[in-house]
Image (cartoon, rainbow, N blue to C red):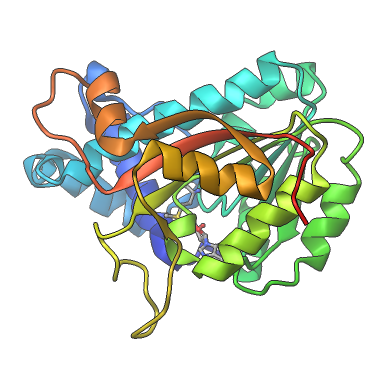
Length: 278
Ligand SMILES: C[S@@+](CC[C@H](N)C(=O)[O-])C[C@H]1O[C@@H](n2cnc3c(N)ncnc32)[C@H](O)[C@@H]1O
């Protein structure tokens, strides 16, 4: 059983593996567990890329952005545990390992993680993870954001609706249709307790509009990079915008010594207000 490379989930995992094992300390990725989701042949390929071909990987601004983004969402994840949230929902979790890397803290604090992804991915992840780690604090949920009917997801959320929760969606929205992702955000705003947190990132409109398209003309989720417009967009859905950072700003903040930055994305942290307009 292996994870499929849906929406580059394994490609991102491979970059984390390379950074975690072959980078110098300041550029080391904290995800030292991702190798569990890579086949032996993938790990051997990473070894080659991490030694003989490392300069080629480093030349792509996305390479260092993956490192910055991993550290950023690690912080979001740990903030939620620190703030005593008892449920963390990881939508489009792919090969992400936070549920396992932070298992000790999660168990100590009684936090449950809902790992959510498309059926083929989440079934494979569940099998691999259960063989490798103790996963009592983890639940696995099928969700396809393009379906617009999220029955399993809504049912699972219902079991945790009596307190605020955190939802993270790292590197997911660029692959989802505009109207579906907007509906999903609205679902979160209406079903989560006020004070719940949502953290996600998106591609800036006009930067890589064809990226992630499965067919010509598909209208994927994109937003402008203007703070007021982002604020208005999320307020109308029932969120307060707590933090917004362009990927270029994040890259410079986390890795000021690098001359390059990744310019295509924006990251937001939202809180549900409980005041959704009909
Ligand atoms: C680039 S990967 C990121 C994975 C993970 N969040 C991470 O950072 O390692 C994109 C993820 O989005 C998920 N995804 C893409 N389209 C989706 C959809 N329609 N419904 C649910 N998940 C989707 C993929 O299965 C994949 O896990």
